[in-house]
Amino acid sequence: MAVIVDEMLKMSQAQLDDRFTQSPTGEIPSGEAKGTAIIAPGTTYTQEMANFVNHFAWQGKIFDPAKGILRNKILPFGLNAIIAKVYKGPSWMDGKECIVLDYSETSLVAHWVRDEIREVAPRIYLGKVYLGKKRLIDFALEFPASG
Image (tube, rainbow, N blue to C red; front, side):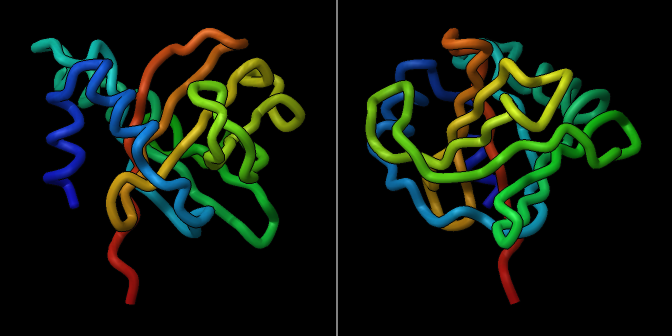
């Protein structure tokens, strides 16, 4: 699975956008996913920034589809915080269905943030982060093999 995320870290923004728009929505995931921030895609800094963010700020997300929410794993010790509502809806990128991670009603610190994800490979999702309506960065989520 990590091979696909490694490939995404080497893609340009246009390639990431194509991968997102050409991928199916997938099912709303369940359980814990390892997160990888994709910052400055297509540059030599992408991997270093992903490592920095993963170590000091954000490690991933934990989905609870029964409750329709997720929690982000943040800080170096993996605090489960910053809750989002999770549902399917139209993407701000292309208008097609995606899985929306909506912080507007659940988080004081991130109420202006919206993430969108689609399943780009089995148990691997590519995400877009919006601040207001402005697209900020991309990220990957890797769920462990089930069973």
